[in-house]
Length: 182
Image (cartoon, rainbow, N blue to C red):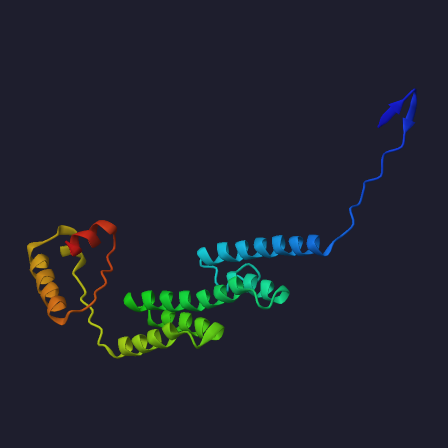
């Protein structure tokens, strides 16, 4: 409150600047930039289509609702489909075929025309046809790191090498997994 000669002066009314088309465009550009930034953060955090409302796809779609030709948002949606193909490929490599199928379905819902989707689908089909060999190790011998188990592991390693196979070690502890690998 401002007082002059003992009297309170009225508060000045805020000056409103007139709205201009240029000011509106600038404001819209800032809002879109913020939205694109949030969508990109979700993408980098692999929140591609989940959780609902807080994911990259919804963020890019919201931008396209305002600016249907926004190239960054359009590319972002393509990147999401591509990322799903990459995640599916990783799942295939570790033998998670059902997970890979789910990831491919999500990517295809976004854009079936991404070449990587068809390529990874073919890889998944081929991987499902490939026989799966499981070598169960004796837990007691593993705990002792026995010579007998070392011989068995050498035979398994030769089999893997001869087949040029991909392998996955599933061990009770990190230390045991490292010993098996070694």
